[in-house]
Amino acid sequence: MRMIARSLSSLLVMAAIAAATRDAIESLLAGALHMASLGELWSLLGDAGLATLRSLSPWLTDYVIDEALTWTGWIVLACLGLALTLAFRPHDELRRRILRRSAGET
Image (cartoon, rainbow, N blue to C red; front, side, top):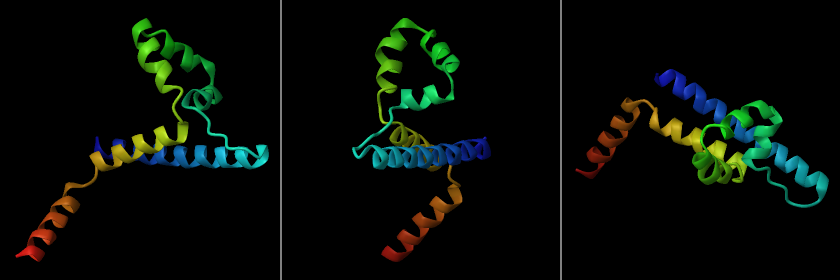
């Protein structure tokens, strides 16, 4: 499970970097700041997935999905990727950091 989550987190961070690069290039070409929304990025992948997502529940679509699709895409992808990375990092590393801090304090 940890390996799958860490792979997914790496993919999300790479997608965030790609989306941020796309936004930077579009901003340079347009001469004005452009930050693609999550919905705009999703529509590049195809409309079938977005239509399926919208057909789940009217309440979920109105209050959660439509709102989330307006958020800046690369920021959402980066936050999800970093959250997964932190949640599934090896616990040995965390344990070593705690032991180093406690050893330094005493």
